[in-house]
Image (cartoon, rainbow, N blue to C red; front, side):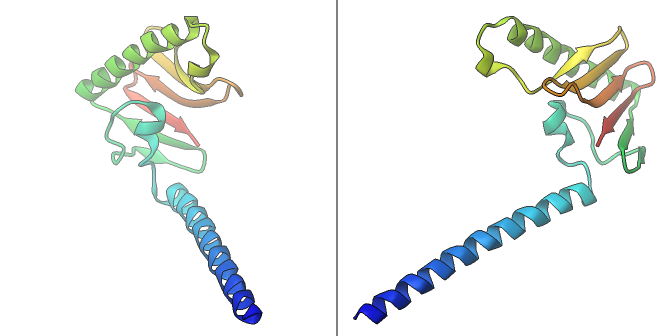
Length: 136
């Protein structure tokens, strides 16, 4: 009977190890697919809604979008509402509600999306040029 239980424990351990290994490989492949096949995650990351399929130019370091007048105004309204939320969160004393990245107004026509901790520039929206540049 002891051999039977030992075999069951070994088989169960191998099954669990196989599942964990499979999940790790699926996660690693999905990260690679995300980087390779495109910017579907950008609207969620930047907290704005736009047509992410309409890429004007893409290279190793940037993704550039060019918008028409209507879409640029829509994005400007979304970013403006996020600026109000950001100022509310910055003025709160609760540090747990503090976001990791925020939109910052540079001038009347330009906005930057930066990570707060590292001060890394993630995106720039220019209403004057009607374009959004995302830095990979």
